[in-house]
Each structure stands twice: as C-alpha cells, then as structure tokens.
Image (cartoon, rainbow, N blue to C red; front, side, top):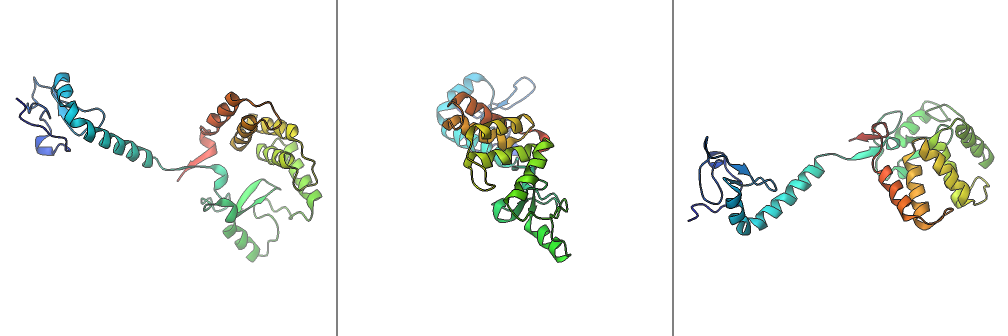
Length: 231
C-alpha cells in the first residue's frame, strides 16, 4: 500500500522520503532523485515505475522549466564586431542604426564615440584616423588595401559588393563573391561562413548543395572564443 504520493518539490524536512512508498532514506536505503525533474526521490526503480503514471505530467513540466532556466542563465553570445572598439561597450540593437561601419579599418564605431570624436575636432575615422573617402573610387581603394593585407572582414565585405553589384561601380559577379567569401571564411570570418551557407542553399554563384549549406551554418554557430563575447 502506498503511504505517500507526491509530485511537489521535496522540502528540507522530508527530502529523504520515497515519493511512492514513503520509505525513509537511511544507511541501508539509498534514495535517488528523479533525474528528469529532481522534484522527488525513489528508493528503487520499481517505485519509480509504479509512480510514473501519477508523476509524469509534473515531471515533464518541471523538466521543461529546468531546461529553460539552464538556457536563459547562460547569457547571450554576441559577435566581437557588435562591440565598439573604442568604448568596448555592446552596440544597441539593431547595430546598423546605432553605429557606422568604416571601410578604412573595417571597424564598426558606435555613434556615441563618433560624436565624441567630432566634438573634439576630429573629422576622420575615430579608430584609425584615416580621412573619410569622398567618392566610390576612394572607398574601393580603401577596401582593396585591406584585402591585400588579408583582412577577412574586408574580403567578406568586398564579396558582398560583388554579390549584389551595388555601389563602388562593381559589376555583379556571384562567382567572384563566393571566391571571396571562401577566402574570408578560411581566414576566420563567421559572417563569410553565413554568406557561403546562403549561397550554397540557394545556388548563388555555386551549384546548390544543402549539405555544404548546413555545414557552413553549423560552423558559424560555433565561433572561436576570440570571435564572441558574453554580455
């Protein structure tokens, strides 16, 4: 006969009682937690099986809660590029509306630091002090200078320009874009990995290949420690 039937969190004064038979834990009776929810304890596998039907609903609910608690307690990972290199603070979302991207050094500067630099009379890149380009030709020259130095961010950025053929007077060339993204990805650019994944998924500049698309996506979601920061 069952003396105790409980699916509520075990209290400190009764945490050594089997939820099915009521047997108290001792030197000879070892109680074990329900590994899924950790709400109750059992003295044996038989008691756990006997109590399963009554405990199942509460167990699933608490197991889901524990999973959410573990997930949300981990914090959020953001790419290194989402942090202003000057003040080192995370740029508010969406980052495009709260920062500017400078092709001279491939750095994204928050508007707060940019305005502070202008107030001090600096009318150039607040990070590398390079004067702002006046036209598309100057912009392209700055990008290509970074590409020659094997900057993965610059190579990925140039690939995007070739992908759409917008601005900088570049003709649309999807194959060239894929070549640049591949090179940038090999140099460690997670953004280039994403672009490659999209290219393979939709067959842009390459033959459609869902396996390669998935591989690129998985690689991007597992960045190196130096490429992400925890808030």
